[in-house]
Image 1 (cartoon, one colour):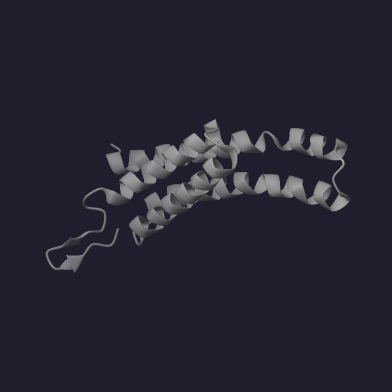
Image 2 (cartoon, helix red, strand yellow; image 1 turned 45 degrees about the horizontal axis):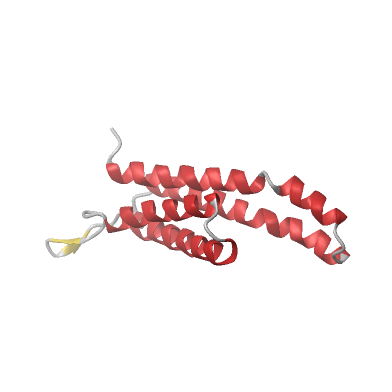
Length: 133
């Protein structure tokens, strides 16, 4: 049976993967629009690669989150880091693009990670010795 903490992490990872897929699905459309634009050749070549970066980053964060569930040493710290990165990306998305569905999903994934990090028993000091989780 999955514990609530694991469910939070898995839900956050699933949201990150859906966000990555949604963002990556726009690659062809953005590439086509760039080819028809009046931008410089340099911009036409580099912007599609920059478009793929958020998809790759969210996929990596999701895979790190899932892997961390199987890796007992440093789990809390690693998942806390993933939550902070997701929250920072979400904040940047809200600043640059507003409250778009992908940004809301990213913020929700970050909240799941933060909730995991703040749950009791996740590596908190107990009886004079630290648990590694």
